[in-house]
Amino acid sequence: MTRTLPNQDTFVHEGLFYPDTDALVAGLVPFVTSGLAAGEPVLVAMPRAHLELVRDAVADADAVSWADMADAGRNPGRIIPWVLQAFVERHPGRRVRIVGEPIWVGRSDTEYPACAQHEAMINAAFTGRPATILCPYDATGLDDTALADAHATHPVLVDATGRRSSPAYAPSDVVARYNAPLPTPPGPVDVRAYHVDTLPELRRFVAARAAVAGLGEDRVADLQIAVTELAANSVAHAGGGGTLQVWTTPEHLVCKIHDGGWLADPLAGRLTPASDGVGGRGLVIVHALCDLVRVHTTPAGTTVRLHMRRWL
Image (tube, rainbow, N blue to C red; front, side, top):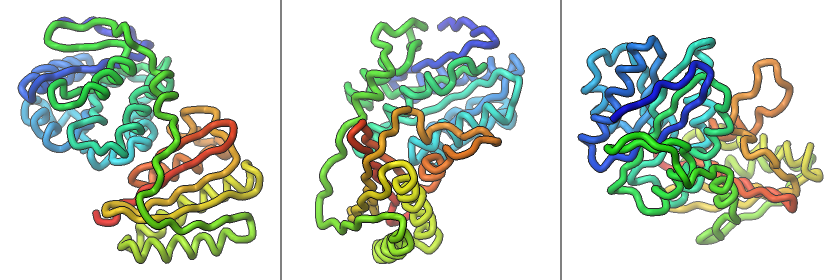
């Protein structure tokens, strides 16, 4: 397999399709070692089983940064600001090389749309940045939808036959396709309307429901902060209020916040705000605190669904 090195100021986003773990290691180890040889900081972020396979095969593993994507990227909305962008910004003025596997066999159907949108948004988030990001895809274990979406979100495709441009590349279409109405809750739902005077009551209500659902004290506090950030945004920017729905599933406590606002920028909440910026931090904080965040937004209104795992 041949690989053309990118220009210093060019962002490259590649999808690597592997049929088995031997091919995964064979595809990633040269990518990592050539990056180190070129003096590029290298990050590998993958689920732990794959991470350990690659780490064991890299001779100079201590020179590489490693991250368990099942933890760091449990919420796909965390990956750009808190994994990829954070790594780039730790190495100002240098080209970086990153392996990121955000989609793997075992990701739930609930998580997948946020994963696909994440892969699409990488292209806009890193345009003009000196970075190469290579995303592995299990070509035998993932379904046809995931593989087709990978072709649409990666301008360059890599497999055993070589490296080529993707004729299906259309990341904006993927973002739009998964900006869809969220499924109806499966069981009983508690509903609360809120406005500026009822925000303290809303916080107490969320805390009580979270405690009953089995969340620990720190997790209850995280959820309170996340809901308060979204509700305060409703009050300030979306007509003065909104509605909160809360329910439980066997795995999650779910909070659904709806208001009349519109998130016109698909990258809202997906980038770390500038250090001297004013505002723009609320949704980034929400992504950092929650285990999954799903968003459906149109000019008619926005729904944000927060998922907190009941057992960690």
